[in-house]
Length: 114
Image (cartoon, rainbow, N blue to C red; front, side, top):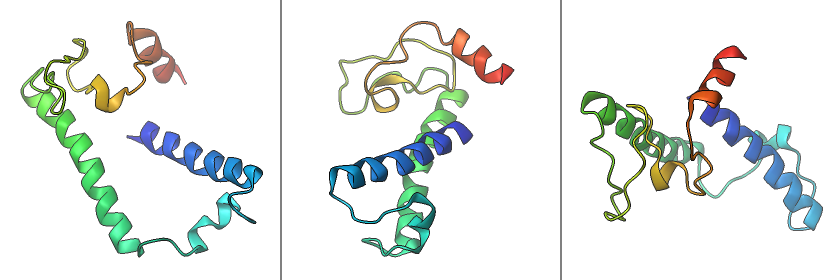
């Protein structure tokens, strides 16, 4: 879970700075993002985030209880994800660009050794 938050934080820092460099955003700093006015109030953003993260973690939990029950993609039923560890969702929703092909063992060990 902490890796997902870290990746989201990096995107939240780099994308606005990139857009500011291109001239789409004026005077934006990532550390002042909490004081900005957004398209929705903080409660709505929290509920949407809770629903999306709940779906992701619920899918993981379902796979742990009933191994490989989430192998078939809900929208693309003909596309099966490669058989990976139980509890790792993988597939099109979680690895959109298929960068996670191959054995996950080296990445798992790198994460553990950090």
